[in-house]
Length: 507
Image 1 (cartoon, rainbow, N blue to C red):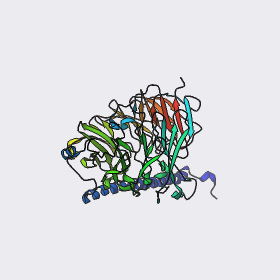
Image 2 (image 1 turned 90 degrees about the vertical axis):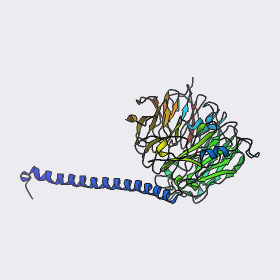
Image 3 (image 1 turned 30 degrees about the vertical axis):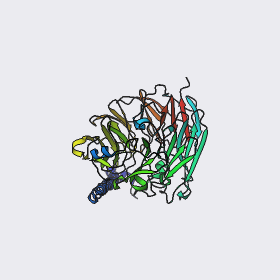
């Protein structure tokens, strides 16, 4: 044994330094491996896009805008059997003309002019009612004057070691706005084989992510592989149309929400069949189908952009491109190449004559493109590109500024005109830093409303400087809040995996 008095302090320090050196070396190796895997993933996706381009199957058939306008049928030319759902294009009515009929509200803008929505609430304050839902889901509530509609799923037991998706069922639920009572619910069996409940895909958002759409007379629901459904407001199923039963290469499940255009229900069936389809609202008959391999990993909801009195374009972002299609025929009118790789989840934003795209793996950037034109408009219509991005959540555009919280819990404000970053601030009161936000940001009155998954809804002043006004939680609800809220007539509707809430000022 060596006497303690003879132990040199340097002999103790050397092993410690050696251990630290080994730790740093292994941490460097680990970091390089992680970076390499991420880089390979991006290169793989980019090479996949290039390969599909080489095969010529990346996008639908291209036509000229002049031919499209000339051949587009007018109201008197459409099949007399199709009774239009609405008298005008749903996405071009005034924001308050319908309650909250679709994902992110009228026009898909996420902007509400409501002035009486509370900024503070809880189980004991400014809560009109709460209702237990029959199952979880990430789809957002949509509203008519009398009802709220949400989709759910049942039959899955996440606690089980081997989750069995063979018992999956999807539901459309109708709830009375007055008191939160469930009026009716419709259940459909899942079509097998379903996407597996595993990894970072389906467990993150579930099997009911597609938000319904309503014209105030009917309600339409996209229930994944089970198809698209039309119901009257009394719960009678009017029709059912399949749009494919495939799975994307990630197996993450479907996410895109329905929109309406005149008498058409438009669905991005990217996961089910790599198609966009238009179904007649009166009977579900397929009017057109546009196919393109680049639709795989395109999870966003399309938007409608009015070019002029004679032309409206259906616009969607896919990995590597933005497309402008005819909403009446599905023909591709124009496209612009982008740097956004796969996993394009946010919906496009419309700023006058420009669309703004976010997303890609992982948060690969953003890009603004002027709508309209013919053919490849990449060089002529690209307005700006930026590295600022959002991976899942769709930003909100208000008075020339874009606001959002990204998948790391960072608040962003950027210019819609240039893409330039205005502000980037870590949100200190978000405890989860790994994909803490799925819901899209809203602008309500003078405030930003940003729903987190586990840390409540953050209400902030509508400015580039993040000034949090309140952070509202329902302490008894520990389930996920993935859904974007709905707003109408002084009422804010929040949806978790377990409950639906109606927040209204007690005053």
